[in-house]
Amino acid sequence: MALTLVLAGIATFVAAVIQRITGLGFVLVLVGPIVLLYGPVEGVTIAVLLALVAACTAVPFVWKHVEWRRTWWLIWPGLVASPFGVLLVHLLPESALLLLIAAMAYFALVASRIPALSASLSGRPGAIVAGSAAGFMNAASGLSGPALASYAVGDKWPQRRFAASVQVIFLAFGIASVVLRGLPVSPIEDVGTLVVATIAGIAIGTILSRNVSPRIARAAMLAIAWAGATVVLVRGILAVFV
Image (cartoon, rainbow, N blue to C red):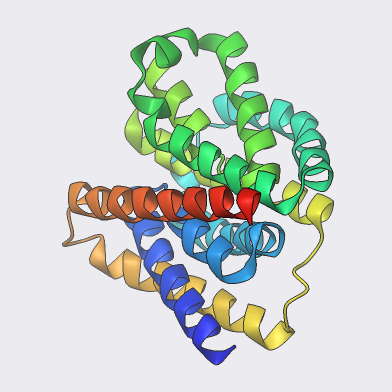
């Protein structure tokens, strides 16, 4: 159990550092390790709570750059869609949940690179679609960032304002997902340790962001996320046949 907590703490710290430098990627980096360590339900529940902590910690740094009109048109559809993501989690067996999380992680890694997808997400109709998808995915797997990033590309949202605004969106979706999913059932001292690791990662990331290129942090994020998604996929496939 102690080794599980140490590994989870390291993964959480790294994810928080990357989140602070790039503005995205906390759950994308964390979901693979945390699901392998705690299972698909408890792992995502922990990840969603920690993502909420990361957003709370990051919002004060970016508040003045938030674009509130666009942000609102992404938040409300996501809040409407969130309960359906939680319902899906309750309906699926563990093996199917692992496969679903892996599929969402893979989609998260390629979504913003699909030109046709990004091009279709613009204006208020695009915001409603992207916000709904992000809210659903956040409640089901914690992975709301990719749909939001695709919308940002399609709607030509300036990077600095998007990176600031998305923290507020993460905060809103995080609150909704924690309310709908409930708190982790893991020992409170373990969860508290991971919360501290998240806050420490955001703090260190703030310092490193002055010298570390976002491109380097993004490359690390992608490498970890691809590896984590692949391991979760393999575990899901094995669970089907075992």
